[in-house]
Image 1 (cartoon, rainbow, N blue to C red):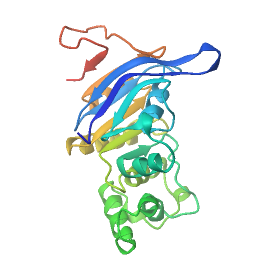
Image 2 (cartoon, rainbow, N blue to C red):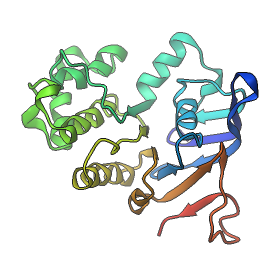
Image 3 (tube, rainbow, N blue to C red):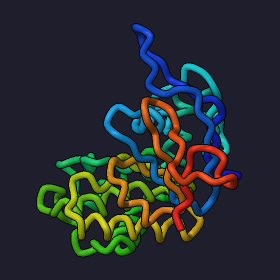
Image 4 (cartoon, one colour):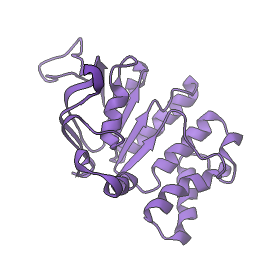
Amino acid sequence: MIHRVQVRGACKSYGAGFTALHPTDLDIGPGELVTVVGRSGSGKTTLLHLLSGIDRPTGGEITVAGERVDLLRGSRLASWRGRSIGLVFQFFQLLPTLTVAENVMLPMDFCATYKTSDRRARALSLLERVGIADQADKLPQAMSGGEQQRAAIARALANDPPVLLADEPTGNLDRSTGDHVLELFAGLAAEGRTIVMVTHEHDVSRFANRQVTLADGRIAQPRDAGATLGVAETVVR
């Protein structure tokens, strides 16, 4: 299914015998919000980079949104990522010389998913969705951190991707603002999107369907793992 994430034996090694991610299996289905937690250096960001095609695995297979990401290269990879994946980063990565609406329109411009005449209207609709339509014509630096993160989420949704990948999306936000952002992610998952969120904050699991813990490049066995869990995942009730 196009909304599914499947990892089969994926691993990532670098020079001098350093393994950032040991062979890993993971299945995430439509409508799931899965948090990936662990200490710095545990392999969280490596896993996210492999899922998004930013980096390639040393071995194994990765299928995201109906494509074998590990086999994609060049323009095919860029086109797939632009249409199928929404990326949200800790530091927002909004272009400072463009307005918020123009930032949201960028993925549409890149992939030509919407007519030129329709792109601003869609950007405004997405900004309304995340609650900052009144900020559309401001530059990013004129906004708070929480508003910039909402703008980044609107941009990630620009091409209506089935999968969202978020790297520490609340890392630069206060608790209240971070909770609002997490509630937004939970609402998007409830609509059927597949969301994988990397974070070092264990308490965000209350917004998730499942939590996966990484330690030293491996999925760690949960303390209370039962027979139905089998592997290293915790089901969040």
